[in-house]
Length: 99
Image 1 (tube, helix red, strand yellow):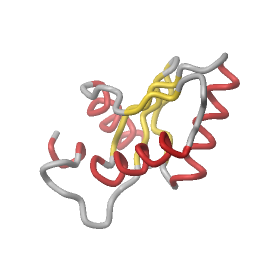
Image 2 (image 1 turned 120 degrees about the vertical axis):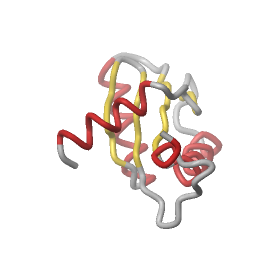
Image 3 (image 1 turned 90 degrees about the vertical axis):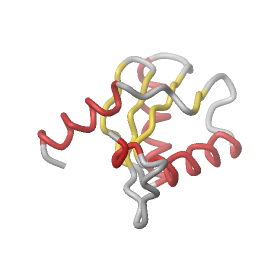
């Protein structure tokens, strides 16, 4: 991903609201299923991470990326911006095609 692509994705992500929240119980199967569904539908999503300190948030981000195959575009405080391009994106749902 080039710096220009990253900047464009961050601009799109700025307008998005978090679709999933990771809280005290961490990355449960239900949370991971919801992240998978959101990435498949929307390609670019925001995830709010409300666990521990910075190291804990970084570990959660690494785990999500490893388990889903997503790419971390940006991490700001407790917000993660994740990207996983779909082979056949739905123009009605994809945040990349809508913006």
